[in-house]
Image (cartoon, rainbow, N blue to C red; front, side, top):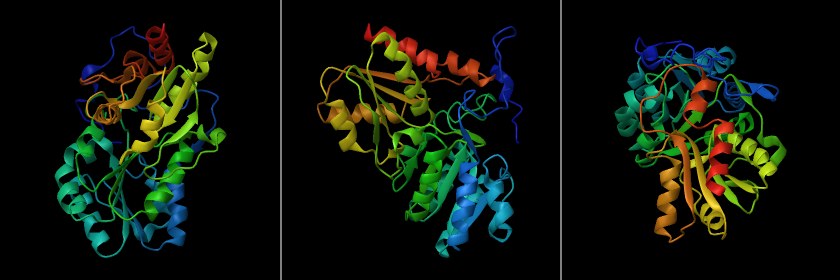
Length: 340
């Protein structure tokens, strides 16, 4: 795994709580069911049926689970080296020849380093390229060089680009199949390795552009995406002890937003709207939802749970998630304060 020499610049102070290595990118709590490499296994399976699928990566096959695809389809796998701009340009070329390329790297490298190539070579031409990126938001302890806290903000303004932020292994499996069917460029955030399974108990089915109400409640409406849907579901169960009744609207597609579902849920009188995202508070789901509500004249009490507008520390994920307010316990604490 590539590690910038600047990664530990903001390391946690000596003596602070540290329960895992900064290298661990899994967000699965103890005791929860997981599936290993759901993206890699799903793509490998789909490629047996769809000969046009190819896989490319920038020296990160193992760390984006694309190695599973590479082992099963070595003649359709391309290792581009540490050259994200070349990766995106090659994917564009393959799409022009009728293939369906899946290009993987870390979210920071796609959004910060290869933006112009994605914009001009892929999005402007509306090519059928799927960009699937690991380490979204705060899912690594490596620090600012590897934490893609602003990737959605960077990509939301790009025309033609669909943006997906799956919650768990089931979401990733279904989303991978859906974006393979979809014609056009897609950016998907990826949870890799041993990914939790949480949506199976909600009779969930992923659809591009559709949000899903997972549970209803009278006091608080959580609107969430990515791993934060798992966290708010946990928080909703914990808040039952305080007689705080919480609904959860999972929004796996950040662009285009499911405006009808969001407005319908937010218009229900008497409950606070809390948007929860594994992303900076600037330019992501929270601001997308807030802008939508303002334009439509829907004015509930609105709160946001998101990462701060700053470069984050390096360290162990449990410590960092508590510090920056996206752990289950911190969500529960904030909601109790807001409601009471």
